[in-house]
Length: 296
Image (tube, rainbow, N blue to C red; front, side, top):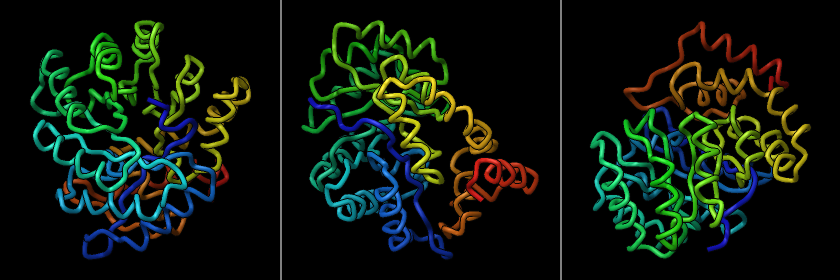
């Protein structure tokens, strides 16, 4: 299957109204900004989109509206993972029916499946859809890691599993994935903004970025410099952004990025419990780094 996208994909936040419901008007504004600033793909209902506190109806509506707003201008990748395989199949089939260009499916959280269970889980989902699937390896959230050998097996043996969003944080693990897949095509995307350039230097196709929510043009330029082989310049841009990147994770994502967007006047609303507002001390640190990065 062809690569879904190259460059910078935004792990888009979900904006809320004061009453806590989804703000679809604001969602449209954010998507239009991302596309106009050069973002290469929209990732809907991932971790940054607070999918864990959306109902299934809300999740599917956000995905459907995102696809409608984007209108094929860039690829839309829908987050349809679940720790219940049957639920993930249902969500994935719905997203495909709406016109999603790809799926991002997180490894099943809480259950702590074996590697064999992970293979069975992802294979079952893939058998029920025809569009490309990206595995989402985020052991810090899921409680279990997709082993490099498991990732390689799935990419080699399941035709529509095309790659992985790698958010494990260990660049050596990412290197091993590339090594195991050296004789096959695999699309690897950075899932941690502080490793974007390093992963692309190893052969990654881009990033699924939190930073892009507040700095879409800067993130896109960084990613394309890396993809084009201008690693020295890409590294300069990566290091320039590093303080902001680190402070976007000074508290659990997406608390800081929503705070940052509100500092920029985007009025994306609050978070759903159990996530809460940033501590004042952390907010000040984030704000200062945004000023130094030229965002404020």
